[in-house]
Image (tube, rainbow, N blue to C red):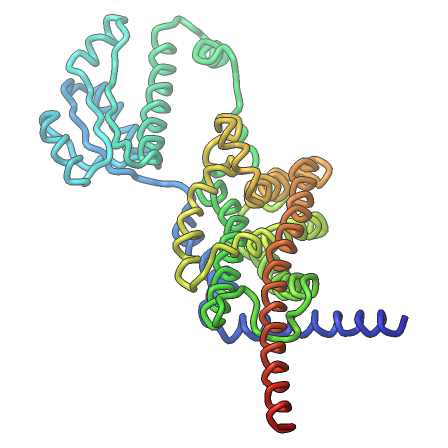
Amino acid sequence: MRDFIRRINHGIYDLFYIWKHELVMAVKDTGMLIFFIIVPLVYPILYGLIYNTEVLHDVPVAVVDNSRTALSREYLRKVDATSDVSIFSYCANMEEAKELMARKQVYGIIEVPNSFSDDIVEGIQTHVSVFCNMSGLLYYKCILLANTEVSLDMNADIKMARTNNTTTREDEITTMPIAYREVTYFNPQNGFASFLLPAVLVLLIQQTLLLGIGLSVGTTRYSSRTGQMIPNNPHYRGTFRTVLGKSLCYLMIYLVMTSYLFCVVPKFFSLVQLSNIKDLFFFSLPYILACIFFAMTISVVVYSREECMMYFVFTSVPLLFLSGISWPASAIPDFWRYVSYIFPSTFGVRGFVHLNTLGASLQEIAFEYKALWIQTGIYFVTAIVVYHGQVEIRLKEVKGIIDKIRAKRKILLHKDKE
């Protein structure tokens, strides 16, 4: 019984020794400090400042007015008056307008046909052609939206002018038989930052853990003569104490960083925040643990400090797509949807967006919440398997060294007796 208690005490002591050792290493190692502290602190601010304006305004366009009538000038004046579009130049023909687009001076062309006014007067449907630079979808959105709104507004005026209504109410019914009201939920300004930044914040936790833990493993392998993942230290002689000690260090760091990312950054940029602190904490805990154990498992493929950059950095954009934020999850092929279930970021991004941006409760994101706990359990087991193999190799090396020392001792003692 005493021996069992002594072993438990030694295990707890080693666990906290490993926690302290990993924490000191994270602070002293410049690379780990950058990934664990600097990147989570600075990157969201830089990203948010870039997209802080949320929407585009005054996208420059060129105009080819072949009609040159009062009606065409009214149409173009109303387009220019919108907040989305600004007329940069009136061109004589399409070739001149295309040249401006080729030089990136404008991002769209509005062409008014020469029959514009005549068609309207004769009661014939007319067309206005809009050409957009599709290298940026936000340019297309602004140009198309401005022209659509102006055409609808002028259509209403033309309808009222051609009817014999006697009251304003009759004009309203004529122009809009079905009244509608547009209500934008959860992203009132239709902003890019409100749409993308929450997903980036969640993905950032997983990616920095992958890079930081991979860097730590690469450093340990490089400094080890045999290229093992654990240091040549007697306190790292147990699998559970090694995994728990290392994960406790990372958990302590990322509880602080996650609080900053999930609470401070959205508030700083005035993003939608509909969740409460309690739900965020209970959701963040399995996500951080799943990311930690996933990173500890996958770091087995890292053999140098540089390799973690080559293995993990490029995955950020594909993982953002697989999360179902930038592309609807329902439209992702089954194969890639199942592949996405490997990564904690998939359930983390969806859960956080529903929880924080859409105002869902933990019960309403039960699928993502349970999936994160399942991933935590699976990756904890895989981390145990990976580090158990490393501990066994280290113990065999130590045993071999001890056997060699004992053999030399026996030889020396035998020589002394002779």
